[in-house]
Image (cartoon, rainbow, N blue to C red; front, side, top):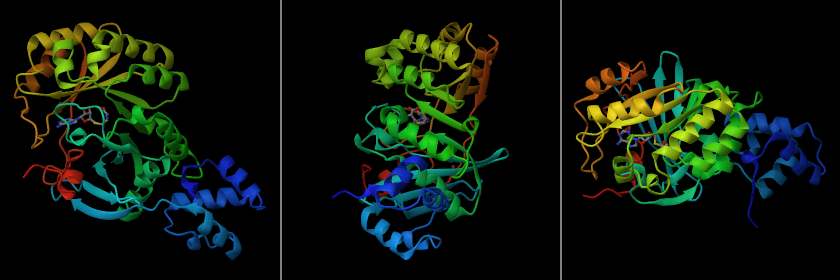
Amino acid sequence: MAKIDLKSMTIPEIEAFLAELGEPKFRAKQIFVWMNKGVESFDEMTNLSRALRGKLNELCTLTVPKVERKQVSKLDGTIKYLWMLEDGNCVETVLMRYKHGNTVCVSSEIGCAMGCAFCASTIGGIVRRLTAAEILSQVIFTQKDSGLPISNIVLMGIGEPLDNFDNVMRFLELVNHPDGMNIGMRHISLSTCGLVDKIDKLAELQLQLTLSVSLHAPDDATRSQIMPVNRALGVERLFDCCRRYFETTGRRISYEYAMIDGVNDSDAQADLLARHLKGTPGHVNLIPLNDVRESKLKPSKRVAAFQKRLESYGITVTVRRRLGGDIDASCGQLRRKTLHLEDA
Ligand code: SAH
């Protein structure tokens, strides 16, 4: 019989489970607090009776990822973890140290089905989606292992978070809980390649998180070439959806744009992007392309010019600072290297 995934459960769900065992309600919060502190076995939950600990051991799993590899940047203190999960799969988490607080970049899936041409995470396709507990545990154990308090989360690691919608929403509820990690929604960013129906679904939940849309090109010819997800949807529908998101939630969208040499970095593309964004508040984050060994795409040399051109239309533009340049900090790269998935 499959074991019960206790760490993916909310306090009321744990209460209901404990009721079946004939245990009092208040134990649920005690268990929730222990799990979020990063205990590695039920036996560490010392305020529970020995009998209850025994039952939990027998019936439940605790989801404790183990450090498979850890790299610390000498340049800026960025830490990259490769975690080994209970089924032998690995996921990456990156801890970045910003002035405004320590930020973790978590993975939502093992591999990715989206097929973006510039991204290392998708090269071997998708293996499976992560459970809420596996996403939450990346935050809990990164904080525990590093000893650094985490104040911000970005869902920008391996995988497409909106392709794992239910588990990611559950993760958000758990990580936001005052008895758990207690991370405010305004300190969380979710990045998507632009799954329109899921963005509409997310809008209905009215979460105060920041939505980042990986745009990377303002025209269908270019976007469909580098992002297969665009082939069925097209940029017009994506921009319409982004406008609806802003109207429903009042939250500005952040558009990510990885600058690729000769592909998406022309003045004409900056002009078209500006035209699309007209009238809806948004923010553009230009990302210097990380070189992925398996890809022929190269970093653009026109980042500053592209930024200037967009700014001339009154658009707010930032350029992402590169952290962890001396470690395999771009997502998907450490997993591929460790599992020997890279081409020789
Ligand atoms: N699937 C989600 C989140 C994961 S990727 C998404 O598509 O948004 C996080 C960000 O890194 C995305 O904007 C993605 O397009 C970008 N990215 C992936 N590979 C990159 C690379 N080699 N250089 C720069 N940015 C990259």
